[in-house]
Amino acid sequence: MKVLVTGHHGYVGSVLAAAMQEAGHEVVGFDTFYYRGCDFGDGSEFEPVLERDVRDVQPADLEGFDAVVHLAALSNDPLGDFNPTWTYDINRDGTMALATAAKEAGVRRFVFASSCSMYGAAEGDAALTEAAPLRPLTPYAESKVAAEEALGRLAGNDFAPVSMRNATVYGVSPRLRLDIVLNNLVAWAHTTGAIRLESDGSSWRPLIHVRDVARAALALLDAPEEAVRGEAFNIGSDEQNYRISELAEIVRDRLPHCKVTLAEGASADPRSYRVDFSKFESTFPHCRLEWTAERGADELARAYAEAGLTFDDFVGHRYIRLGQLKRLLDAHALDAELRWKPSPTTA
Image (tube, rainbow, N blue to C red; front, side, top):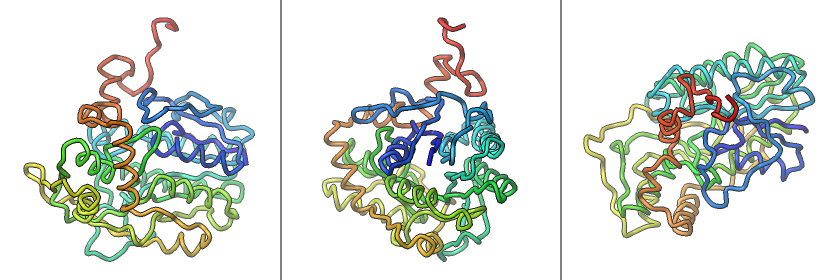
């Protein structure tokens, strides 16, 4: 297939786009490059690319593509809380504009990176299927619910959207993030000798490795249209439903010199949900997810040590999405709608 991957320069996208290329697809990246220079490792660039804001996409941009894998979004909850309007504008309205343009351009497959965070505050410890009530607690989660609903209205014989309700992602990427739970816990341990919990650790969170997200996206891309049209799939594995406190212990087992500590005023995180992944597993029995949090913590600890990650790196802007956007705003590189301002040479 000829595939457009939006957000290809982000945390998941820089792994997923390369994996799709390696699988034999003709892949074009599409990104606004908020995180240019926020590289971990060699920072090699993917080609070919369209440098564009997803809110401005036109049908002509998408002509000739067989599929779109849509990752571009503002993530995560702290960024959404900072300015909810940006999150709704890009994640909800941008997704709708992109999908509408894709359908008009004749693109048949649309794989959407949604989120298990839509389940919000689950009642009890039962694992939630795709039919469970959606209880989004944040602008980020609300934007994903609204985008899924909009995609459902576009589904038809000539357009097959499918939503990946991804568990919380972890693992090493060329565009590393340290504002997601396992990556963050290992970074605290590596740079301070303490595994710092921002909550009391009692909440549930499902996890998935970034390479397994790519593996699942490939399965959805290659599936018969009738198997995915208008569907949503929880993406992850039952074995990787963890309490946050369990993740802290996994990190401590690998870095035994570190202590688990609680941030001042830490309390229960209202975002708590266990997730059932049997629908994806039964629909795609040959797509085996390979990673566990234990293996991922080992990978992260090794990568941080090899890169010489410091505490200043950890708390700086490069690996924290909100920090990077604040830096660009403070430098007047972005306007109040998170659009790039013309540079003096192009104004």
